[in-house]
Image (cartoon, rainbow, N blue to C red; front, side):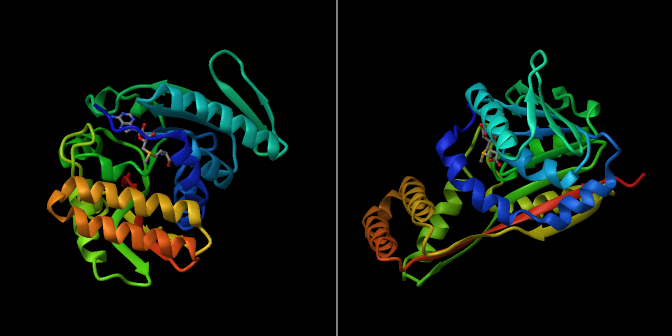
Length: 285
Ligand SMILES: C[S@@+](CC[C@H](N)C(=O)[O-])C[C@H]1O[C@@H](n2cnc3c(N)ncnc32)[C@H](O)[C@@H]1O
């Protein structure tokens, strides 16, 4: 069964995602695409990647948003329409698609509710000029990523894969215990087999390089300042819950760590950096 993600969590992280993703890799992707590219976004959630990348591609384009969670896809249409109108773009809905009318041309969006874990070869990858995803690769398994890489013939851009680096400021004696336990939880099966977790960026880089792609990679860390209370609280409680599940013997130390960190957030004393990497794999023609 696929891991579920709430629309509220995806909203909370969206501003951090937006500033973290590499605009340089987006520009390299844009130069590799045709005049009116068709993109397929795997694990699209509420459409955060579309809202960031479509304006950077700055031309007429068509997107297929794929997710197992049909409610998130409904929310994606709603959020894209609201965002487009706030930017002064007209939105129309011919049939099942949505069209965002921009000065750069029309941006067509369609949704496909599908479980990605069932063989990637069944996805309509060849009907698209690029395969993109954001915050997905750390959920998938090595064999699943290998099957995807074999099926892809177009540019592949994977944004925001967790790489295991995390720096809490100020430091706490149990940060390493939490990081270890959290990394163990990240390797849990999220519906695709044992998850790559923080190994995802390095694994994807090796895999696509070995297949002869030109691979570009860039850091895309979340930098969560002391005023980012809601995001910091979500990170502390999320880390502590995942760590306690992975390491029940350390439950007392994990509780004490969580309480100390929540107290620091309330006093505006905690900041956090979470390591991510973006990757762009371009097939050599
Ligand atoms: C961390 S969220 C990222 C969402 C979005 N890409 C973003 O950047 O905000 C992971 C997304 O992958 C989707 N997902 C997880 N497992 C899936 C599966 N087996 N099939 C399809 N979608 C899946 C989730 O529903 C969720 O929307």
